[in-house]
Structures are given as structure tokens and as C-alpha cells.
Length: 413
Image (cartoon, rainbow, N blue to C red; front, top):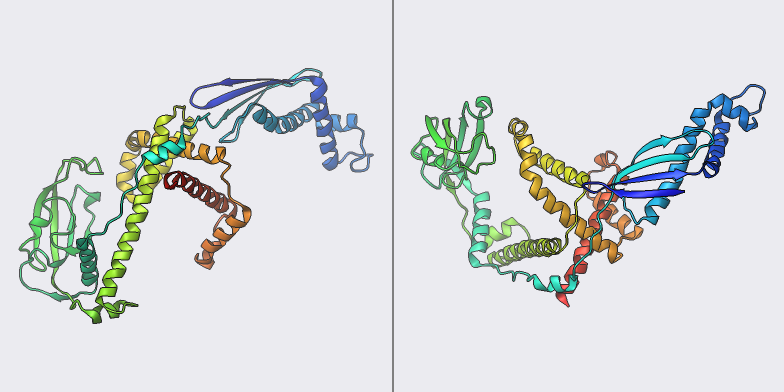
């Protein structure tokens, strides 16, 4: 069989093939045999009718198309292997010529993984320095203060609101979600709302109402509000004084398995240290992957870029209000284009490393990790999981983790 592979644009390839009738006739005979199994023909026992009778009963054209499917199904993996192609999606198949006693001609279009020539991984890994994790005393004190606030009592006040008071407010604007009423509660001065918004809440009393304007920042996520002056109608529902508990050994013991206040502080420091170590590891991994991606040049298949952009948009949809999201979807496609390309390139490089270094996951490993995860998953929800897809997803994540560990071994040696 003659085949020709042609590179198209954006990671797509085209395979054209021509199979001599003598070879194709083998698949025609197989197609007839398959049809013989389920075909009922008067005067013949099931499966015993002559081939010519079966062909006439099923129709010569249907037999040929069935044979074509068998031929492509059989030869497609062989073509990929011979040409060292790795498809990333199902192929688009077209029959170009299919006629009795003639060569069978076909065309296959498919997106494939690009050819990636990796740089010196050892040298690059040693170039990227890991951050030394340090925890300052102020970080521990801030975390401890948050714990205190979470255990505070609140006393209703009749006076004007001051910085540091705990307040409950309702607010709305005709320019935001059709004047939808929002409810919020926070420490005045630390609510992280639009600049100027909280300043206007100072000196308001409980049940007092007020109108004022605030200007949204130019870089606000929702572009329809960026740099806009927006009018708010606000009602101060409650003004409360925070009464913090005394910070002592009894407070620490009351939180759980802590011997005293010093033990609580040490545990908080350990927690912050772990968080920083994880953040440092993530940062190093991203930097080494970015460095590797900079060193290689290849065309990213369009189908991968589209998929990554769509994934980013879906994430944005979950993070934002639906009304805003619908207005911005087309804009988001443009906005995410560069970042999607960066992510896709890094992911392809990571996959190439795993491939070249034969990094894989044993079935026993996968089963153990999946079972561990499902043990903590609500039992009534497990039946809703597509286990095959979930295992495939988990396998990919495990291979990614092993590949990063492989790169970290370069750094540590």
C-alpha cells in the first residue's frame, strides 16, 4: 500500500493512501463474512449462505464501505507507527475512490503532537534557584490575630461606625446586575472593596441609609465597570464592636490539641512554613518549565490551543457572575490567547520529558491512589463518577508529578 504524509498548518497532517485491489479484496471478503453472521437469507441456514448471495443481499456498495472501514481500522495504527505520529484526537477520514476491481484510495486528516527537541535538562534545572523559606514573626502574629477574630464576640453599637468595627451592610446600584441587592459583612477598613467605598461608610449608624459614588479602577476584571463612576445606595444594617478573647494558654487549649500558647504559635508557624514550601515548589516548577519552553521552538496544534482557551473560559465562568461573563466571552478568547499558548507549550514540553524518560505509572500505583481518593469521597456521589475518565485524569496527574520529581532530582544532585 502506498501512503504519503503531508504537513498542513497548525499541527494538522494529511495522509493519503492507495491500496491495490488485490489487498483490498481481503477486507472485502472479511466484510462479507461479518455480514454473513447477522444476515437472514431465505433457503440458507444462518452463516451458511455463499459469498456471492450475501453480497447481493447486503448490496455491493455496503460491502465495499464495510471493507473500507475494516481496511482503515487495520492500517491506520500501522501508518502512525511507521511515520512516528502521535494523534491527539480522532481522525477525519474521507474515501476518495471506492469501486470494484479498482485501488482503494482514502485521505486521513488528524492533529498530531509536534516534534520537540528537548534542551539540556540537567543544566537548566541547576540554573533555577529555589527560594529559601523563612517565616517572620509578624506572619505568625497576623495568623494568630485572625484566629482571635474568628473566636470574637460581637456587641451591637448605637454609635457611628469607626475603623476596626465589624459592620453588616446592604448595597445596590442600577449599574450592577440590574440593581441587585448585595449583602456583606466585614471589618471596616479591611473589606477590600472598591477604593472609596468603605470611606463613605465611616460615621454611619445602624439602619442609616446613604447614597454616594465610587470610581472602579481601570484594571477592574469586569471591563464594563472599569474606570466607571458608579452610584451606590447603601444601608448600614449593624455596627458591632469586636470583643476579642484573652490570648493565653487557656485560649490555645480551647482550640484543640495544643498544650499551651507557645505550642499554638509553633503549630501556626509550621503550617505557614508548609504553605510557603508548597508555594516555593510550585514556583520553581513553573520557572523550570518556562525555561525549558523558551529553549524549544515548535508549532502548537490549533486544537490544543482551542481546548486550553475553552478550559480557561470555563474557569472564569465559575469565578464570575453569569451576567458579566456572557458580555465578555469573546473578549476573553482574545485575552487568554497568549496565556493559553504559554500553558499549552509548557504542558507539551512536560509530556515530551515523560515520554523520552519513560516516566509512567504502574496499574497498582494508580489503583492505590484512586482508591485512597475515593475513600474520602462521599459514597453516594461515587456512582456519578465516570471511573474510566477519572482514572485517566488521575494517571496524567501522577505522571506529571513524577516528571517534576525527575527534574527536581537534577537540582538536588
